[in-house]
Length: 310
Length: 270
Image (cartoon, rainbow over all chains, first blue to last red; front, side, top):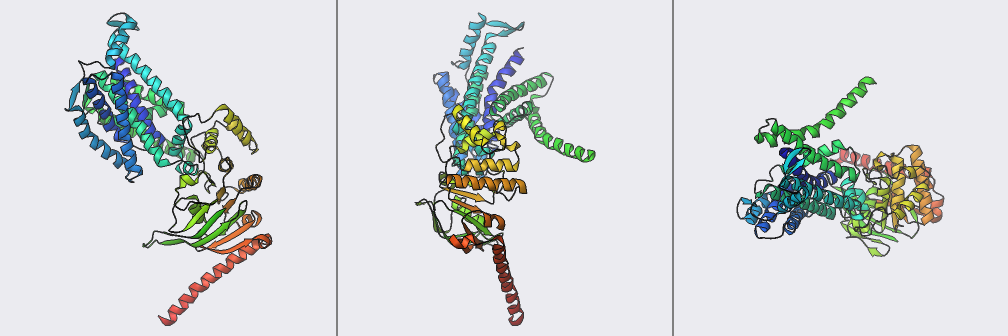
């Protein structure tokens, strides 16, 4: 049960990463690998502030801003200096590696003895269950795990709601249109370049925020923790799209969150059944490959069947 | 209203693919006039329209709209003055967004885009009412993705979007060329109706002599990046499609003559 609970919690935390990837990948069709660097950047900034006694909420907010700044860098490299999308992301991601080491001062920063959001989560869990352990559907769970899950769910709900509101404003809609049809939105007076920079900054802000939450949940920040995270995000977004096949904003946001949680649960089950943790990234990459290729193959099959029938 | 002075544009200069697309085009268009631009493929007519819209900057010359010099003004800043309809019906609308969302985006053409709701109830009603005037039963499909509509329907909506806020200048780039004859006809009629209703200054590129002869109050004929003929006023009223065709045949013969004359000279002297 603890395993399941923790899979849910991490799935929810990483759904913020998935929301960030949704903005770059689904809205702008921009495969933004900056995410690998900015999730660690968020964790590093939050962790180093927490060890200096900054309030967890302020530290998490600062992580969002740090990620947003990284996103702006990628956006500016791409739009102003005309550097290829992927390369812009790679440059910023690489630079962030050094920056992260500087921010943390070492390659791993433990957070076990400082006040973090997890401390609050534990208090919340205790307040609900009355003592250190609780029962969930008849299973014993710790107050910390229960509180973390509830807090993560609340944070994700609030952020998803704000994102939904944003994408239905004039600005947010112009952003969606920029990814959908550049020529059209330019003719309607919107600078697509500015939209890309703004979009990537929000995207990486969310990713870094996810990093900050993840560090607080697992109790440390590590300079390596971002490796392959973009693929995690992509997997969640793709599963979300498959779960809810609609381009409607609300549906897409919901699908992305569900996709992240579902993917994390699948992985947890696979690990429980004896998947070697070293193979995790390989399996993830293969999964994304399959998800990208499958629709095309299905389409071909459909066309062929159609031709055969006719 | 629209003033073009000696526009010149060369694509890929200094390479094998060098194209001198505009070779000194000057044109003055009065407020409220409806000009059709015709020409063969590669005559520079679409390039001219693109230069006015701001798709690229001209190498030389000046463009001013309503007294404002926009020669160095990027495309998205000119948008406050210009409404556009493209040749490709897919170019003018965002396919995954709904009909209502597309229209609402156009309702803020050239205005700031802040954090107010895109589709407040009042606007939704107005959108539905104006879509109903198209008589295409699209008012029942306001919340469908616009990508599920036909080319003709999308082009009609693009026309409505381009003119939602009255533009100083309406640019139509062969906007019926990609449609089936029936839809093309429908769009032509809609264009006429909207242009006359709002008394819009319009520049329309077309490859159809028939359209050029029946629409608008002035015809500009282009060839090889320059203006070849300009029919306005009384002269315009007497132009028929056949006259335009004949004029094009003359050009083609002249060009062939040039080519064969060059061939003859080479054979004799080289």
